[in-house]
Length: 299
Image: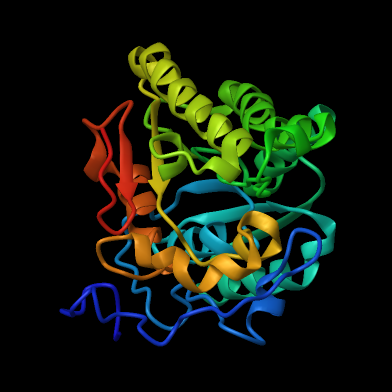
């Protein structure tokens, strides 16, 4: 693929990126995935056209996966970008920070744990201070661990999943609102799991349903203030989340086959959706969930 505008057959795209059985400890990193089947974040292909010139964005989970692809795209579209990430993901974060800077934009690294409310408020404050303001917020960081039987799902895992995926979104958005002027945008990452929950992802799917509802309700609340809220719902996307316990290792080679395109999606294929929702091109799009899932039917 030359760039995201290249004419191509989507069913044949990324045909060489089929993961084998594997497991990554902790939250997983792109650096580890690169040793096997690396994900495509648009490093070599995303071509910007000034659609976010002068904007200031905060992206959680911006070190890898979807967040990394969005960070690269935003920078190449002209935005300064701050990324939040776990300290253990420093290697990935340094690479993305370098790519933002290579695009000629300011890059801000903000390591920490978003399950802590105090850090969430600090994250926003530091982003605003370093960027000189804030007008795009992307709540993207997520936790996903497969658990086959509800009786094996611990209180701690359930709590950590909701704190990462839902509570952090609330804490960060609430802290960001005083800084967002009319024309600003909030984009939350939900999932196909909100519509087609997998039996082994009951707790994760529940958080994604909550994100959907939160986004639509907040969109109505903020519309009159000129702040747009929308969501993106990915299907199966090849990110560290998946081999780091998001799916059972033996299922990884087959997960993408459930899509009509018959393959995993790549983070680079999500970035244009986030660019569209952040740009003025989507000025009349509010409370929308934009599905990027390879054709999986949704209500």
